[in-house]
Image (tube, rainbow, N blue to C red; front, side, top):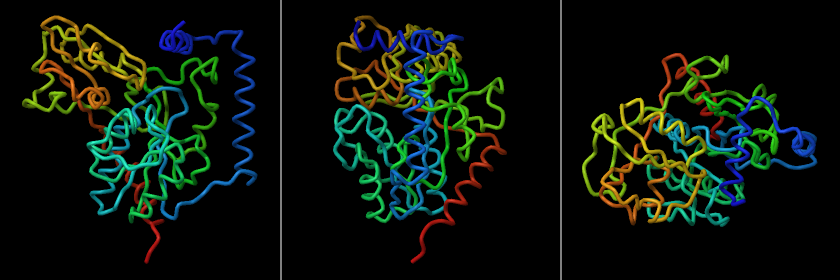
Length: 336
């Protein structure tokens, strides 16, 4: 069985009501190891390291994407509007493990797709590396006042001042089991310990008390950068190839369908490499993809390939709650 087939096998079972029974013993072992590791940090047997400036972690407790990147962009923008110098640190999934700065001209194969997207969209300094503490220290050395960690909730070595967890409002926590029987990286009890829970697209109130985030499309842009911005509605009634290498590809396809677009879905594994052959459908239909996928195929995409950037939006009360958390972080910025 190939890696992507194995991933699909697990994901399909994670989001069924009951876990696979024979995976339960492995889940129990996973829970024990993660609990012991967390306890070791709490008791000081393993050390969390401060980098000298406030750190806000935006993470999740499930495997796969939940919408963290749009939220990181939103938080960065909110802080910049307050005159704060912001930096972003990330693991750089799929890239090299070297601690390095990400620029708009970096390669997704070298730094990861999400950090490259963040560098191009945010306008702030972005650093990646397996050693998040070292990457965060590089940001602090550049004079950054607040660091946002894209993912890294379980990276307890990096000391943090606040934690936000993003959950998928559609899929929730799956069957509620931990890896490998379910999608959880930690027990769901962890949600009671974080500063804030954000539910991405929770239209049915599955997560009481959580802030509800909506991802709104911000037009459609040519992947190769050659052409004019279009509205998503301009594709209404058309047949398109929908390409999505994200944690929940169906969310992207549903977005297109809500705009009356006829979708030929092409889901790919999260962070999947995109090759020219992936865009070779040999027909006249346009291709619509996520922004995260677009950063990986900009150099070889044809004129029929488009991407859909999204922005995070909150209602007035939820935005006020988010603002209060950011204001509290600002008070922790060292003076002098």
